[in-house]
Picture (tube, rainbow, N blue to C red):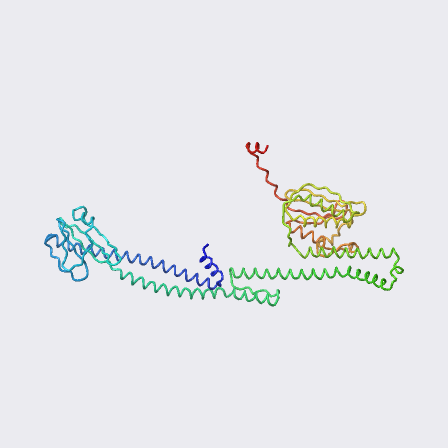
Length: 479
Protein backbone atom coordinates (compact mmCIF):
# COMPACT_ATOMS: atom_id res chain seq x y z
CA UNK A 1 0.00 0.00 0.00
CA UNK A 2 1.34 3.42 -0.97
CA UNK A 3 1.99 6.15 1.56
CA UNK A 4 -0.96 8.36 0.47
CA UNK A 5 -3.25 5.34 0.73
CA UNK A 6 -1.98 4.59 4.24
CA UNK A 7 -2.49 8.20 5.28
CA UNK A 8 -6.01 8.15 3.90
CA UNK A 9 -6.72 4.90 5.75
CA UNK A 10 -5.43 6.32 9.04
CA UNK A 11 -7.46 9.49 8.52
CA UNK A 12 -10.59 7.47 7.83
CA UNK A 13 -10.13 5.28 10.90
CA UNK A 14 -9.76 8.34 13.11
CA UNK A 15 -13.06 9.80 11.94
CA UNK A 16 -16.19 9.43 14.01
CA UNK A 17 -19.09 7.31 12.86
CA UNK A 18 -21.12 10.44 12.16
CA UNK A 19 -18.39 11.82 9.91
CA UNK A 20 -18.09 8.51 8.10
CA UNK A 21 -21.82 8.34 7.47
CA UNK A 22 -21.84 11.95 6.25
CA UNK A 23 -18.94 11.33 3.88
CA UNK A 24 -20.52 8.10 2.60
CA UNK A 25 -23.88 9.81 1.98
CA UNK A 26 -22.27 12.77 0.19
CA UNK A 27 -20.07 10.46 -1.89
CA UNK A 28 -23.00 8.28 -2.87
CA UNK A 29 -25.02 11.31 -3.98
CA UNK A 30 -22.03 12.75 -5.85
CA UNK A 31 -21.50 9.48 -7.72
CA UNK A 32 -25.22 9.26 -8.50
CA UNK A 33 -25.30 12.84 -9.80
CA UNK A 34 -22.17 12.26 -11.90
CA UNK A 35 -23.61 9.12 -13.47
CA UNK A 36 -26.95 10.85 -14.08
CA UNK A 37 -25.12 13.82 -15.63
CA UNK A 38 -23.17 11.59 -17.98
CA UNK A 39 -26.27 9.68 -19.03
CA UNK A 40 -28.26 12.92 -19.55
CA UNK A 41 -25.50 14.50 -21.63
CA UNK A 42 -25.19 11.40 -23.80
CA UNK A 43 -28.95 11.36 -24.35
CA UNK A 44 -29.02 15.08 -25.08
CA UNK A 45 -26.10 14.87 -27.52
CA UNK A 46 -27.79 12.00 -29.34
CA UNK A 47 -31.08 13.87 -29.53
CA UNK A 48 -29.46 17.11 -30.78
CA UNK A 49 -27.45 15.24 -33.40
CA UNK A 50 -30.51 13.35 -34.59
CA UNK A 51 -32.47 16.61 -34.92
CA UNK A 52 -29.62 18.33 -36.76
CA UNK A 53 -29.27 15.43 -39.19
CA UNK A 54 -33.00 15.36 -39.91
CA UNK A 55 -32.92 19.08 -40.59
CA UNK A 56 -29.93 18.67 -42.92
CA UNK A 57 -31.73 15.96 -44.90
CA UNK A 58 -34.79 18.16 -45.32
CA UNK A 59 -32.74 21.16 -46.46
CA UNK A 60 -30.65 18.96 -48.80
CA UNK A 61 -33.78 17.73 -50.59
CA UNK A 62 -34.91 21.35 -51.17
CA UNK A 63 -31.52 22.31 -52.70
CA UNK A 64 -31.43 19.04 -54.67
CA UNK A 65 -34.88 19.78 -56.15
CA UNK A 66 -33.69 23.20 -57.37
CA UNK A 67 -30.49 21.65 -58.80
CA UNK A 68 -32.54 18.94 -60.52
CA UNK A 69 -34.68 21.53 -62.29
CA UNK A 70 -31.94 24.00 -63.31
CA UNK A 71 -28.99 21.63 -63.44
CA UNK A 72 -26.03 21.57 -60.99
CA UNK A 73 -24.01 24.04 -63.05
CA UNK A 74 -26.80 26.62 -63.41
CA UNK A 75 -28.68 26.38 -60.13
CA UNK A 76 -28.85 29.71 -58.32
CA UNK A 77 -26.88 29.80 -55.03
CA UNK A 78 -27.94 32.85 -52.95
CA UNK A 79 -25.13 34.67 -51.11
CA UNK A 80 -24.33 33.37 -47.64
CA UNK A 81 -26.53 35.24 -45.11
CA UNK A 82 -23.88 35.06 -42.39
CA UNK A 83 -25.29 32.09 -40.42
CA UNK A 84 -27.28 28.94 -40.92
CA UNK A 85 -26.73 26.25 -43.45
CA UNK A 86 -23.70 25.92 -45.74
CA UNK A 87 -24.19 24.72 -49.32
CA UNK A 88 -21.80 23.16 -51.80
CA UNK A 89 -22.52 21.73 -55.28
CA UNK A 90 -20.25 19.10 -56.78
CA UNK A 91 -20.41 19.21 -60.58
CA UNK A 92 -20.02 16.15 -62.83
CA UNK A 93 -16.58 17.28 -63.94
CA UNK A 94 -15.40 17.51 -60.33
CA UNK A 95 -15.69 21.31 -60.04
CA UNK A 96 -17.23 22.78 -56.88
CA UNK A 97 -19.68 25.69 -56.58
CA UNK A 98 -20.37 27.55 -53.28
CA UNK A 99 -22.40 30.69 -52.48
CA UNK A 100 -20.57 33.98 -52.34
CA UNK A 101 -19.20 34.93 -48.93
CA UNK A 102 -19.66 31.45 -47.49
CA UNK A 103 -16.96 30.12 -45.12
CA UNK A 104 -14.85 27.29 -46.44
CA UNK A 105 -16.10 23.82 -45.74
CA UNK A 106 -13.84 20.84 -45.06
CA UNK A 107 -12.47 19.25 -48.23
CA UNK A 108 -14.73 16.82 -50.06
CA UNK A 109 -14.13 13.37 -48.66
CA UNK A 110 -13.53 10.27 -50.73
CA UNK A 111 -16.91 8.88 -49.67
CA UNK A 112 -18.62 12.10 -50.88
CA UNK A 113 -16.82 11.83 -54.25
CA UNK A 114 -18.13 8.30 -54.61
CA UNK A 115 -21.67 9.58 -53.99
CA UNK A 116 -21.18 12.22 -56.70
CA UNK A 117 -20.01 9.50 -59.10
CA UNK A 118 -23.11 7.43 -58.41
CA UNK A 119 -21.70 4.88 -55.92
CA UNK A 120 -24.54 5.58 -53.46
CA UNK A 121 -27.53 7.87 -53.11
CA UNK A 122 -26.56 9.88 -50.02
CA UNK A 123 -24.07 10.14 -47.15
CA UNK A 124 -24.13 11.70 -43.65
CA UNK A 125 -20.74 12.74 -42.30
CA UNK A 126 -19.59 14.54 -39.19
CA UNK A 127 -16.40 16.50 -38.62
CA UNK A 128 -16.13 16.65 -34.80
CA UNK A 129 -13.34 19.14 -34.30
CA UNK A 130 -13.10 20.88 -30.94
CA UNK A 131 -13.77 24.38 -32.29
CA UNK A 132 -15.76 24.17 -35.55
CA UNK A 133 -17.15 20.71 -36.19
CA UNK A 134 -19.66 20.18 -39.01
CA UNK A 135 -22.42 17.79 -39.98
CA UNK A 136 -22.29 17.33 -43.78
CA UNK A 137 -25.05 15.61 -45.77
CA UNK A 138 -24.27 14.62 -49.36
CA UNK A 139 -27.16 13.87 -51.78
CA UNK A 140 -26.65 12.70 -55.37
CA UNK A 141 -28.20 14.93 -58.06
CA UNK A 142 -27.89 14.17 -61.79
CA UNK A 143 -24.25 13.61 -62.58
CA UNK A 144 -23.06 15.41 -59.43
CA UNK A 145 -24.09 15.95 -55.83
CA UNK A 146 -25.38 18.57 -53.41
CA UNK A 147 -23.85 19.00 -49.94
CA UNK A 148 -25.57 20.84 -47.08
CA UNK A 149 -23.66 21.38 -43.84
CA UNK A 150 -24.31 22.92 -40.45
CA UNK A 151 -21.82 23.77 -37.72
CA UNK A 152 -22.15 21.55 -34.68
CA UNK A 153 -23.48 23.73 -31.84
CA UNK A 154 -22.26 22.47 -28.43
CA UNK A 155 -23.46 25.47 -26.46
CA UNK A 156 -26.74 23.82 -25.34
CA UNK A 157 -24.77 20.85 -24.08
CA UNK A 158 -22.30 23.09 -22.23
CA UNK A 159 -25.13 25.10 -20.65
CA UNK A 160 -26.97 21.93 -19.73
CA UNK A 161 -23.80 20.42 -18.21
CA UNK A 162 -23.12 23.57 -16.19
CA UNK A 163 -26.66 23.61 -14.90
CA UNK A 164 -26.49 19.95 -13.95
CA UNK A 165 -23.14 20.54 -12.25
CA UNK A 166 -24.62 23.29 -10.10
CA UNK A 167 -27.61 21.11 -9.29
CA UNK A 168 -25.26 18.25 -8.44
CA UNK A 169 -23.22 20.45 -6.11
CA UNK A 170 -26.41 21.49 -4.33
CA UNK A 171 -27.49 17.85 -4.12
CA UNK A 172 -24.12 16.82 -2.65
CA UNK A 173 -24.30 19.60 -0.06
CA UNK A 174 -27.87 18.70 0.75
CA UNK A 175 -26.94 15.01 0.93
CA UNK A 176 -24.14 15.78 3.37
CA UNK A 177 -26.56 17.71 5.58
CA UNK A 178 -29.16 14.96 5.34
CA UNK A 179 -26.50 12.33 6.06
CA UNK A 180 -25.37 14.30 9.10
CA UNK A 181 -28.93 14.59 10.36
CA UNK A 182 -29.63 10.91 9.73
CA UNK A 183 -26.39 9.94 11.47
CA UNK A 184 -27.25 12.12 14.46
CA UNK A 185 -30.74 10.68 14.70
CA UNK A 186 -29.71 7.10 14.04
CA UNK A 187 -26.79 7.18 16.47
CA UNK A 188 -28.71 8.84 19.30
CA UNK A 189 -29.35 5.42 20.95
CA UNK A 190 -25.64 4.68 20.64
CA UNK A 191 -24.85 7.98 22.39
CA UNK A 192 -27.23 7.12 25.22
CA UNK A 193 -25.75 3.62 25.39
CA UNK A 194 -22.24 5.06 25.55
CA UNK A 195 -23.25 7.49 28.29
CA UNK A 196 -24.81 4.65 30.29
CA UNK A 197 -21.68 2.53 29.89
CA UNK A 198 -19.49 5.44 31.03
CA UNK A 199 -21.76 5.95 34.03
CA UNK A 200 -21.46 2.28 34.98
CA UNK A 201 -17.66 2.49 34.61
CA UNK A 202 -17.46 5.60 36.84
CA UNK A 203 -19.93 4.48 39.53
CA UNK A 204 -18.90 0.78 39.48
CA UNK A 205 -22.60 0.03 39.83
CA UNK A 206 -23.04 -3.24 37.97
CA UNK A 207 -26.63 -3.59 39.15
CA UNK A 208 -27.85 -0.76 36.91
CA UNK A 209 -28.89 -2.32 33.63
CA UNK A 210 -28.97 -0.15 30.52
CA UNK A 211 -32.57 0.61 29.45
CA UNK A 212 -33.68 -1.46 26.47
CA UNK A 213 -34.64 0.88 23.64
CA UNK A 214 -34.54 1.05 19.90
CA UNK A 215 -34.78 -2.00 17.73
CA UNK A 216 -32.79 -4.35 15.58
CA UNK A 217 -29.04 -4.02 15.99
CA UNK A 218 -29.33 -1.40 18.77
CA UNK A 219 -31.53 -3.67 20.86
CA UNK A 220 -29.20 -6.63 20.34
CA UNK A 221 -26.22 -4.49 21.35
CA UNK A 222 -27.98 -3.28 24.52
CA UNK A 223 -28.97 -6.81 25.43
CA UNK A 224 -25.42 -8.01 24.86
CA UNK A 225 -24.05 -5.31 27.17
CA UNK A 226 -26.67 -6.12 29.81
CA UNK A 227 -25.70 -9.79 29.54
CA UNK A 228 -22.06 -8.76 30.01
CA UNK A 229 -23.02 -6.71 33.08
CA UNK A 230 -24.91 -9.71 34.48
CA UNK A 231 -21.84 -11.89 33.94
CA UNK A 232 -19.67 -9.29 35.69
CA UNK A 233 -22.13 -9.18 38.59
CA UNK A 234 -21.98 -12.94 38.87
CA UNK A 235 -18.18 -12.89 38.65
CA UNK A 236 -17.93 -10.25 41.37
CA UNK A 237 -20.35 -12.19 43.56
CA UNK A 238 -18.29 -15.35 43.03
CA UNK A 239 -15.12 -13.45 43.92
CA UNK A 240 -16.71 -12.08 47.06
CA UNK A 241 -17.93 -15.52 48.08
CA UNK A 242 -14.50 -16.96 47.36
CA UNK A 243 -12.84 -14.32 49.51
CA UNK A 244 -15.36 -14.83 52.33
CA UNK A 245 -15.06 -18.62 52.19
CA UNK A 246 -11.27 -18.41 52.02
CA UNK A 247 -11.17 -16.12 55.05
CA UNK A 248 -13.44 -18.50 56.92
CA UNK A 249 -11.36 -21.56 56.01
CA UNK A 250 -8.10 -19.81 56.86
CA UNK A 251 -9.34 -18.65 60.24
CA UNK A 252 -9.30 -22.07 61.95
CA UNK A 253 -5.77 -23.25 60.99
CA UNK A 254 -4.36 -19.75 61.50
CA UNK A 255 -5.90 -19.51 64.96
CA UNK A 256 -4.61 -22.92 65.99
CA UNK A 257 -1.17 -22.16 64.52
CA UNK A 258 -1.03 -18.78 66.26
CA UNK A 259 -1.96 -20.32 69.63
CA UNK A 260 0.66 -23.05 69.33
CA UNK A 261 3.37 -20.63 68.26
CA UNK A 262 2.45 -18.16 71.03
CA UNK A 263 2.66 -21.00 73.55
CA UNK A 264 6.13 -21.93 72.33
CA UNK A 265 7.28 -18.31 72.37
CA UNK A 266 5.91 -17.66 75.88
CA UNK A 267 7.50 -20.78 77.34
CA UNK A 268 10.79 -20.00 75.59
CA UNK A 269 10.85 -16.45 77.04
CA UNK A 270 10.25 -17.79 80.53
CA UNK A 271 12.96 -20.36 80.06
CA UNK A 272 10.55 -23.14 80.98
CA UNK A 273 10.19 -24.69 77.54
CA UNK A 274 11.99 -27.90 78.47
CA UNK A 275 10.37 -28.27 81.86
CA UNK A 276 6.82 -27.31 80.85
CA UNK A 277 6.76 -29.44 77.70
CA UNK A 278 8.00 -33.00 77.94
CA UNK A 279 9.64 -34.35 74.77
CA UNK A 280 6.49 -36.24 73.82
CA UNK A 281 4.28 -33.16 74.14
CA UNK A 282 6.82 -30.98 72.34
CA UNK A 283 7.02 -33.44 69.46
CA UNK A 284 3.23 -33.63 69.29
CA UNK A 285 2.99 -29.83 69.33
CA UNK A 286 5.62 -29.39 66.60
CA UNK A 287 3.94 -32.06 64.51
CA UNK A 288 0.67 -30.18 64.94
CA UNK A 289 2.35 -26.94 63.84
CA UNK A 290 3.88 -28.68 60.83
CA UNK A 291 0.52 -30.17 59.87
CA UNK A 292 -1.14 -26.77 60.16
CA UNK A 293 1.55 -25.15 58.02
CA UNK A 294 1.16 -27.90 55.43
CA UNK A 295 -2.61 -27.43 55.48
CA UNK A 296 -2.19 -23.68 54.98
CA UNK A 297 0.23 -24.27 52.11
CA UNK A 298 -2.16 -26.68 50.44
CA UNK A 299 -5.07 -24.30 50.94
CA UNK A 300 -3.08 -21.38 49.52
CA UNK A 301 -2.07 -23.43 46.47
CA UNK A 302 -5.63 -24.59 45.88
CA UNK A 303 -6.97 -21.07 46.30
CA UNK A 304 -4.44 -19.76 43.79
CA UNK A 305 -5.29 -22.50 41.33
CA UNK A 306 -9.02 -21.93 41.79
CA UNK A 307 -8.80 -18.15 41.51
CA UNK A 308 -6.90 -18.38 38.22
CA UNK A 309 -9.90 -20.06 36.64
CA UNK A 310 -9.22 -21.20 33.10
CA UNK A 311 -6.28 -18.83 32.65
CA UNK A 312 -3.16 -20.89 32.09
CA UNK A 313 0.09 -20.51 30.22
CA UNK A 314 0.08 -24.23 29.50
CA UNK A 315 -0.71 -25.07 25.89
CA UNK A 316 -3.18 -27.75 24.82
CA UNK A 317 -1.71 -30.85 23.21
CA UNK A 318 -2.75 -34.33 22.19
CA UNK A 319 -1.48 -36.77 24.83
CA UNK A 320 -1.93 -40.25 26.19
CA UNK A 321 -4.23 -39.91 29.20
CA UNK A 322 -2.75 -43.13 30.64
CA UNK A 323 0.62 -41.39 31.11
CA UNK A 324 -1.07 -38.58 33.03
CA UNK A 325 -2.92 -41.04 35.29
CA UNK A 326 0.22 -43.05 36.01
CA UNK A 327 2.18 -39.89 36.87
CA UNK A 328 -0.61 -38.68 39.18
CA UNK A 329 -0.70 -42.06 40.95
CA UNK A 330 3.08 -41.92 41.47
CA UNK A 331 2.78 -38.46 43.03
CA UNK A 332 -0.04 -39.65 45.28
CA UNK A 333 2.07 -42.59 46.52
CA UNK A 334 4.99 -40.28 47.28
CA UNK A 335 2.79 -37.82 49.18
CA UNK A 336 0.90 -40.44 51.21
CA UNK A 337 2.94 -43.67 51.31
CA UNK A 338 0.28 -45.43 53.40
CA UNK A 339 -2.29 -45.22 50.58
CA UNK A 340 -2.11 -48.00 48.02
CA UNK A 341 -3.21 -47.27 44.46
CA UNK A 342 -4.38 -50.10 42.19
CA UNK A 343 -4.00 -49.08 38.54
CA UNK A 344 -5.85 -50.58 35.60
CA UNK A 345 -5.31 -48.22 32.69
CA UNK A 346 -5.43 -48.46 28.93
CA UNK A 347 -3.94 -46.09 26.40
CA UNK A 348 -6.46 -43.35 25.45
CA UNK A 349 -5.53 -40.19 23.57
CA UNK A 350 -7.14 -36.91 24.62
CA UNK A 351 -6.52 -33.25 23.87
CA UNK A 352 -5.73 -31.19 26.97
CA UNK A 353 -3.27 -29.55 29.31
CA UNK A 354 -1.08 -32.19 30.96
CA UNK A 355 -0.45 -30.37 34.26
CA UNK A 356 -4.12 -29.47 34.73
CA UNK A 357 -5.28 -33.00 34.03
CA UNK A 358 -2.64 -34.46 36.36
CA UNK A 359 -3.78 -32.09 39.13
CA UNK A 360 -7.39 -33.24 38.67
CA UNK A 361 -6.45 -36.94 38.78
CA UNK A 362 -4.22 -36.34 41.82
CA UNK A 363 -7.08 -34.62 43.66
CA UNK A 364 -9.38 -37.56 42.89
CA UNK A 365 -6.82 -40.06 44.24
CA UNK A 366 -6.13 -37.90 47.32
CA UNK A 367 -9.84 -37.61 48.03
CA UNK A 368 -10.33 -41.39 47.73
CA UNK A 369 -7.22 -42.01 49.85
CA UNK A 370 -8.73 -40.12 52.81
CA UNK A 371 -11.62 -42.58 52.96
CA UNK A 372 -9.86 -45.82 52.12
CA UNK A 373 -9.56 -48.15 55.11
CA UNK A 374 -6.17 -49.65 55.88
CA UNK A 375 -5.33 -52.45 53.51
CA UNK A 376 -7.90 -51.34 50.93
CA UNK A 377 -6.38 -49.79 47.80
CA UNK A 378 -7.74 -46.87 45.82
CA UNK A 379 -8.97 -48.21 42.48
CA UNK A 380 -8.01 -46.22 39.42
CA UNK A 381 -9.31 -47.44 36.06
CA UNK A 382 -8.97 -45.85 32.63
CA UNK A 383 -10.56 -47.14 29.44
CA UNK A 384 -12.07 -45.96 26.19
CA UNK A 385 -15.84 -46.03 25.70
CA UNK A 386 -16.95 -44.96 22.25
CA UNK A 387 -15.61 -41.45 21.74
CA UNK A 388 -14.90 -40.85 25.45
CA UNK A 389 -12.00 -41.53 27.76
CA UNK A 390 -13.50 -42.84 31.02
CA UNK A 391 -11.56 -42.50 34.28
CA UNK A 392 -12.99 -44.09 37.44
CA UNK A 393 -11.54 -43.60 40.93
CA UNK A 394 -13.20 -45.49 43.81
CA UNK A 395 -12.54 -46.43 47.41
CA UNK A 396 -13.88 -48.88 50.00
CA UNK A 397 -14.93 -46.20 52.48
CA UNK A 398 -18.39 -45.27 53.71
CA UNK A 399 -19.30 -43.47 50.46
CA UNK A 400 -20.99 -40.11 49.99
CA UNK A 401 -24.41 -39.52 51.51
CA UNK A 402 -27.18 -38.80 49.05
CA UNK A 403 -27.78 -35.41 50.70
CA UNK A 404 -24.17 -34.41 50.08
CA UNK A 405 -23.98 -35.47 46.41
CA UNK A 406 -25.49 -32.23 44.93
CA UNK A 407 -22.89 -30.10 46.75
CA UNK A 408 -19.85 -32.35 46.64
CA UNK A 409 -18.22 -30.18 43.92
CA UNK A 410 -18.98 -26.83 45.62
CA UNK A 411 -16.07 -24.73 46.83
CA UNK A 412 -15.14 -25.30 50.49
CA UNK A 413 -17.99 -27.74 50.97
CA UNK A 414 -17.19 -30.52 53.38
CA UNK A 415 -19.64 -33.11 54.59
CA UNK A 416 -20.15 -33.45 58.33
CA UNK A 417 -18.35 -36.78 58.26
CA UNK A 418 -15.29 -35.13 56.67
CA UNK A 419 -14.83 -32.31 59.15
CA UNK A 420 -12.22 -34.22 61.13
CA UNK A 421 -10.19 -35.17 58.07
CA UNK A 422 -7.49 -32.96 56.53
CA UNK A 423 -8.42 -30.91 53.49
CA UNK A 424 -9.86 -27.61 52.39
CA UNK A 425 -12.96 -28.63 50.48
CA UNK A 426 -11.46 -27.35 47.22
CA UNK A 427 -10.06 -30.52 45.68
CA UNK A 428 -13.22 -31.74 43.96
CA UNK A 429 -14.14 -28.20 42.93
CA UNK A 430 -10.81 -27.96 41.10
CA UNK A 431 -11.50 -31.34 39.49
CA UNK A 432 -14.82 -30.13 38.12
CA UNK A 433 -13.29 -26.90 36.80
CA UNK A 434 -10.50 -28.77 34.98
CA UNK A 435 -12.90 -31.34 33.52
CA UNK A 436 -15.33 -28.62 32.37
CA UNK A 437 -12.46 -26.72 30.74
CA UNK A 438 -11.63 -29.86 28.73
CA UNK A 439 -15.21 -30.35 27.58
CA UNK A 440 -15.82 -33.33 29.86
CA UNK A 441 -18.11 -34.34 32.70
CA UNK A 442 -17.54 -35.61 36.24
CA UNK A 443 -20.16 -37.54 38.19
CA UNK A 444 -20.50 -39.26 41.59
CA UNK A 445 -21.84 -42.76 42.23
CA UNK A 446 -21.39 -45.62 44.69
CA UNK A 447 -18.70 -48.15 43.99
CA UNK A 448 -19.10 -51.92 44.09
CA UNK A 449 -17.01 -51.91 47.28
CA UNK A 450 -19.49 -49.62 49.05
CA UNK A 451 -17.44 -46.45 48.85
CA UNK A 452 -17.56 -43.45 46.52
CA UNK A 453 -16.94 -43.76 42.80
CA UNK A 454 -16.04 -40.63 40.87
CA UNK A 455 -16.20 -40.93 37.09
CA UNK A 456 -14.64 -38.52 34.58
CA UNK A 457 -15.63 -38.57 30.91
CA UNK A 458 -13.38 -36.69 28.48
CA UNK A 459 -13.71 -36.52 24.69
CA UNK A 460 -11.03 -38.50 22.94
CA UNK A 461 -8.70 -36.92 20.40
CA UNK A 462 -8.70 -37.88 16.75
CA UNK A 463 -6.15 -40.62 16.00
CA UNK A 464 -2.98 -39.44 14.26
CA UNK A 465 -2.95 -39.76 10.50
CA UNK A 466 -1.01 -42.83 9.31
CA UNK A 467 2.31 -42.16 7.64
CA UNK A 468 2.10 -42.08 3.84
CA UNK A 469 3.71 -45.15 2.21
CA UNK A 470 7.07 -44.59 0.62
CA UNK A 471 7.45 -44.84 -3.12
CA UNK A 472 9.82 -47.45 -4.50
CA UNK A 473 12.56 -44.91 -5.11
CA UNK A 474 12.11 -43.37 -1.68
CA UNK A 475 12.12 -46.81 -0.05
CA UNK A 476 15.37 -47.63 -1.78
CA UNK A 477 16.86 -44.31 -0.77
CA UNK A 478 15.77 -44.88 2.82
CA UNK A 479 17.54 -48.26 2.86
